[in-house]
Structure formats: C-alpha cells, structure tokens
Length: 264
Image (cartoon, rainbow, N blue to C red):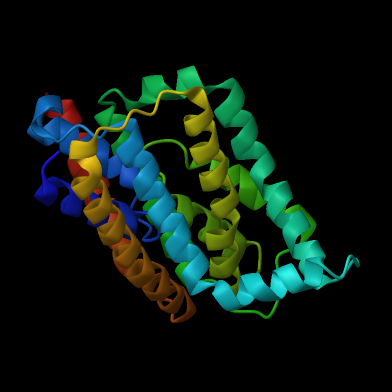
C-alpha cells in the first residue's frame, strides 16, 4: 500500500467514523464509480489499525469523562458512573447479536447494492433533519433508551445508515439532551470497536509485513488526527443544531445513488 493511499484512507476513516455521512455507504459508492479494482485494497490489519486509531481519538476527546467513570466504578457503588457503564453494556446487545449470528448475511449487502445505499442515505437524511428540529432538554439517556439506541446502532451496520447519525438522532428524538446524546453515541461504540479488534486478532487472519510499517503508521496518525477533529466538531454541531447540512448532503448523495443504480 502506498503512503498517499494510507493517508487518504486514514483521513476518510477518521472523519466518517464520527460525521453522520456513513463511511460504509460512501465506500460502496466509491467502488461503483471507480470500479472495485480501482480503489486501494485495505488489508484486514490496516482496517484494524484505522479502527484502533479512531477509538483512541474518542478516548482522548472524552478522557476526563472516562477517568471520572473509572473512578466511579472503582467505588463499587450503584452510582451514576456504574449506571452509565450499564447503559453502555445494554446498548451493545443488539449490535453484538447481529454481528455474531448474521455476519455472513450482512456481507451480502456490501456487494455493490447501490440502490440500497441510496435509500439508506435518504433515511439517514430524514433522521438528521428530525433530530435537528427536536427541542433541547436536560434529560439523560435512560436504560430503556440505551437499548433502543443500541437497536439503531445495529441497524446502522447497513451500508448507507450512519452510525453516529442514527444513534444521536434516535437519542435526541427520545427526548435526551443533545450534548449528552452525542457523548453517549461516541462512547458506546468504543467497546464494540475494541471487541471487533480482539476478534480479528484472535482469528489469526491478521498478517504483517515489515514493508507495511510506514503506511500503517501514517494511516494510524491520519485517522487519529482526523478523528480528533471530527469528534470534537460533531459534538459542537449537534449542540448548535447544525445537522441539517449533513441531512441535505445525505439526501442529495442518496438520490444520485438511486438514479445511478436505476440507469445501469
């Protein structure tokens, strides 16, 4: 893999992990436009490295929150921090079930299903539009909310549905505070990312060549920096109700994708 490819892929991963535009959807569109063989093929190791970088950027952005949560957990009391971690665990259940039992079925959806991507992007656009117009509150995510948001995260496995867009929008539409909704959305994915990384490592499918060290390192740095920027920016956008811009973007790209698929 070339260094320039690593930088581009790292930036794309870092941005789309947090911005509500669906990284998987854009990848499928890119393959359709450029052809499967025209895009640099990411190795499993490279994918794992990029996901680790974005998970690390999330930890850095929310480092104070995470430290407070850890301190609260170490008190071994049923306090707010323990409740928060329990909600995160509940939110992981739907995506974990889907990932474990329906992995092969999901892979079939990533074979150039451009019309599907287009429709899912339009759904993402609608969710973002509705969330942007929801009234702000001081309400925190409840246990029942956590499970519903987890269902949204599981549905977001579909190409074209933005994970951050779906989870934040669902949380806001349930009446939760927008800033708290964004915080919960970004923290809830960290355990899933590390779980997926552990699964890939234990599978024994990861291969490493010394010649890949430089691209891997540069890709990691690019994804980490882009992730820091996108995560911080997204929190501000949600708080200021600026998701409509992404809603318009997703709607336009979704319509183009549908037209493209029909015309083929």
